Each structure stands twice: as C-alpha cells, then as structure tokens.
Amino acid sequence: MRRMIKARKPECDGHGKKTKHGHHSKHSIYGSLNGTPVGLTLAQTGVNLDFVEAGPTAGMIANPDRDTITVKTPGVYEVTFSLTTEFVNTEVAGVNYSLFINEVIVDASEIAFFKDAGDEPFGSPGSKTILLNLKANDVISVRPFIFVGEAVYYRNPTLVVTKVDK
Image: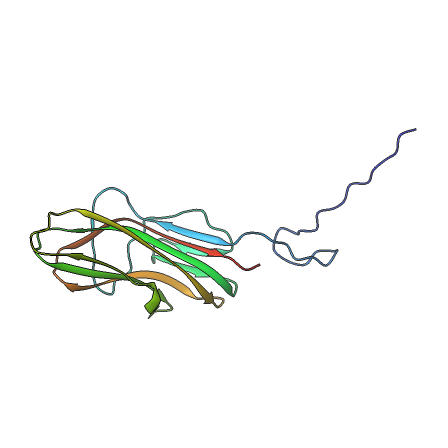
C-alpha cells in the first residue's frame, strides 16, 4: 500500500511578507549601476557620476537616468562604489569621490586620487565600501570634488548597494 505525502506550500509569498505560518521571507535586496568601461567621462564637481545601465536589482530602484539608487526599506546596507580616474593634460591634479545620501555627503566614504608634476599619465583604480543605516526612500549617488587641476576624467564606474540585515 502506497502512502501519499501531502506537499507543503511554500512559506514565502514571494513579496517579503508574512506567510500562513507566520514566517518572514528572506529575499535578498540589492541594486547596482554600471558605467561604460570604454572611453572617458569628464568629472565635474557636484555632478553625479554617469551610470549608463542598471545592473541586477531587487527590492530597490536603480535609476541610470538620474544616476541614483533608491532604497525601499530601512536597514543596514553595504554600499560600494568603484571607478578608474585619469588625469589628462594637467601637471598637478587632485580629486575626491564621495557617496551622497539625499544630496548630503557621507564624509567617511571619500576616496582621493592625486597626480604630481612629472608623473606620467595613468589610470588609477579605486573603490570604497561602507556600511550605512538607511531609511526607506533614501537616495544614493556618487559625486566628485576636484580640488586641484581641471582635466580629471573617470571610466567604468560602478555603484552596488546590498541590504545586509534581514
């Protein structure tokens, strides 16, 4: 005699809500923006880095038109940005890149690049990862601040945001 086994319904409703059994689903929440790896983009003080496409995204809004990521739920997030800076036709140059949350700079997120007189032109890659407590609808962007020189460019920027608490 065969015994019939009744299949259990999944406890996750697919939307991160409590299910029939009272459990919360544990879907990952992440978002990313990618820039172009080919060619150079002029860095402009106070202007968001230019991202040309949204990468994999779930549970937040990655907007390449505004060059921002908006989180939908509060929590602790790991935020990473990276890029390669290039100094072109300038003897001395310096630039900082920082995260901004709702148009306000996150001081601890700064990375800096420098070129001294006599240095050969080169591409200098860099990245920064930081944990941040974010609220629903916080908007994340990355901006440069050029403090020396004029011809500062970047290429291949990325911005990745991942919720680390469940």
